[in-house]
Amino acid sequence: MKLKNKVIIGTSGYNYYDWKGNFYPKDIKSSDMLKYYTGKFNGVEINSSFYKLHTNRFYSNLNSKSPDNFTFIIKLFRELTHRRKDIDETLPKVLNSIKPILEAGKFGGFLAQFPPSFTFSEDNLEYIIKIKSKTPQAPIFVEFRHPSWCKEETYSALKKHEIGYVCVDGPDLPHLMPKQNIVTSREGYIRFHGRNKEAWQKPPVGKKYDYLYSKKELKEYVPIVHNMLSETKRVFIFFNNGYHGHAPVNALQLMELLKETYEDSGN
Image (tube, rainbow, N blue to C red; front, side, top):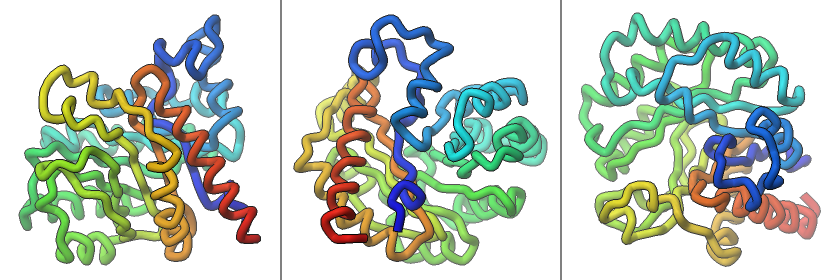
């Protein structure tokens, strides 16, 4: 088994000024970042799509700057995950906008990140299923931010409708999602947010993602990824601890740990 075809690993976003000198060369131009990034990783989450509805031109540009075997995960527009209004008007626009990477075979799916206020209820579960029903050909991965979703009813419904479940790594706090090893679709998904407990309990918000995982902490995920691979066709892994370039550093470290494990085992 070729690990590179089974694991898509990268970061949440790539165009960050404070990554210069930490990950990117100090003098790199913003327009050259994606090309440099794709030389290290085989996938990325596009975060800016959460804040605005991009044009075809935006995605066409992403396509032209990335190799054929690269994968984009598109964070779903916040009108659909946070405001949850006008779904019938907004969703077709989102689907139309991503055509350049969809037609190029580089679209991995949508990341639907819901806010902490989006707690478990039958109505909220039906809303997620409704989004999936309107995008039958587009994989959707759901990230919850409230632990009320951690129940068999959630997992069973997502499996039934082939909706992916995002396992998150974050601080061990009662109001946050716990560390999990859950798969509800043909593809697994893990997001690393960092374990900066103090920042997740108090402002400033930006410090939430100021956390560099140790190799020991990353090794905890080697058996989890291995288990997910035994149940799925591939696993997506993205690091969201982007402060000062921590995310790409940890993504590269986990990539090496996985390669070492698979080379040693002969897989």
